[in-house]
Length: 178
Ligand SMILES: Cc1cc2nc3c(=O)[nH]c(=O)nc-3n(C[C@H](O)[C@H](O)[C@H](O)COP(=O)(O)O)c2cc1C
Image (cartoon, rainbow, N blue to C red; front, side, top):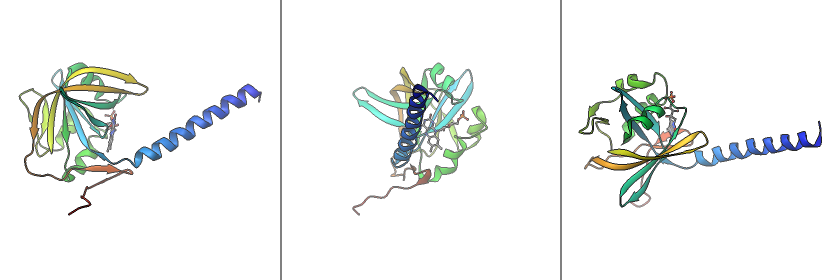
């Protein structure tokens, strides 16, 4: 093996190690779990996400990071609107169902869904359902950031316990101070 080939191999190994460590680190970041849903050409699409973040309060906007190879991605980008449904502790099975086959409309056999004023699927019993208009899409590597401007909100007024994902497991949050 030439020196150049050895160098390339070392760089590839370093990149793999970096990716492995990064994955380990991110598994330790607790995330709230949501289902992002949309409807495109009459077909509902949805998937489980933790990569949701508030972007600005003025205007109200959020960002979701979605794998461009996920089955729901094209519909999310093309429909121009999506709903972020924040899950409760009772939704762990739903979160699993929306991350595995079958994809497309069949996923909506899980949970109780209604059609909001926007025409988008909204989950009954969610902590909140946030309807957004897609403002912009920023591609980076395998993913794309969907920037959504909030248009319609349904916030449960009862304090519902959110579903948390950490180290590959679903769990609950409890405050340190009683
Ligand atoms: C708890 C959990 C969180 C996830 N978070 C994200 C996410 O933020 N972004 C993303 O693109 N995929 C995320 N996924 C993976 C997608 O839900 C999953 O890959 C997708 O729904 C399945 O792909 P398919 O629709 O092509 O079958 C997550 C999965 C789980 C179980």
